[in-house]
Image (tube, rainbow, N blue to C red):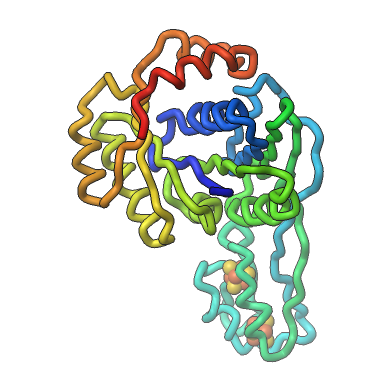
Amino acid sequence: MKEIAVTGGKGGTGKSTVAIMFAFKQIELGKKVLLVDCDVECPNDHILLGINELKNPVSKTTTFYPVIDDDKCTKCGLCVRSCRSSALFQPGDSVPVLNKDLCSSCGVCWNVCPSNAISKEEVVNGEIFRNDILDGLTLVTGRSIPGVRETSPVVEQVRDYIDGLKSSFDLVVIDTAAGAHCTVMRALEDVEKAYSVTEPTPLGAHDLSVILRVLKVLKVPSDIVLNRSDIGNKALIDEVARKHGSNVCCEIPYDDDLARFYSEGNFLEHRLSISKLLKLYKSQ
Ligand code: SF4
Ligand code: SF4
């Protein structure tokens, strides 16, 4: 398997922790791993790997907004009617006006305009960083500019960037954002398998159910990783797994040492201890 994702509907279940532990395990097996942090609004894998401030930017990510030429526009209103985000409005009989906050940069308006009156303005919306963490582990991080509403283009461009790197690695591990929105769906597209991280709580079960439905739509096979498996009610998760034809492939019990490594933010320093812990987990 070349490309997998670690995801999960609910935030705070330990997705990044699991993604990094999975990467450590693969390195131990002699594989070269490309870890990709696609939680672009709040990337944090680097912090768990001992990098406080992201370094080594490799490129900016950009998006496009429509710019209407008043002289060419015939005020036909087609762009306004075609915009599914309601980002264009036409006060009375005037030239349409853009609300950038609602624009998803989908490009429909400049493609439908019969008068060629709409050009594209390129705007920087984020950045991509590459850090070689240790022999066999490289971290690529996408980060959107705070306040950018539509962040899925940042994820798309991170994915384009890693396309040029994949051949140098045995395995790509995509760490997605929490939730089931467009940004997460972009990160999950084309992965061969997803691991949905959850916890045995009613909230965990609910959000797991949502992400499993999304994965079904995307036709991505998925297993479940149950974190803090010995706290709460595991039957809730078993029921969701059964309902969606999924399977709990790994159970991670609460562990004081792991919690301490997490709170200190130094997984890298404790890599060997973490590897020892991994051997204790029930997994299939
Ligand atoms: S790019 Fe798409 S979302 Fe933005 S204004 Fe045009 S049609 Fe609407
Ligand atoms: S589709 Fe083109 S010509 Fe028609 S209102 Fe929009 S910008 Fe103007």
